[in-house]
Image (cartoon, rainbow, N blue to C red; front, top):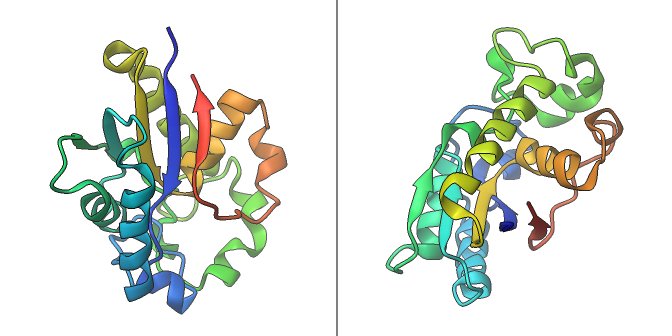
Length: 177
């Protein structure tokens, strides 16, 4: 029996407003992000979701709490859903950091991890899901690395082919594991 997985990115953050690549820094939602997180809850609360899994970084936790706080749906934090760790480059201008993502496909960012390491970490989370959530519909709130891992694993889109394209936000992606 499979798992229906809905993926949503964390809501818009103050760092997004400033054009910063937050990475493993906690981040906080902006005013716009607070509204988008509430919209996420309105959109997904009655969508058959049995559990919400979120990155443990504050901006993702804040998104989950606004969207699903006060409901019966459990919110479970998992560090494996974090964004790629840019190491000493966490928090730098995103345009500058991401101009050569290809260079960090296999080589870790200084003091951080590579994109392949980040994808492997997310895959560890995905490997564990069926042990408890088979046959369920779950929501995952994560980051770019989460989305790329899902697209590679479920849709067969190689990370090598995804990394050169900008990540385009939208209201949720649906996958069947």
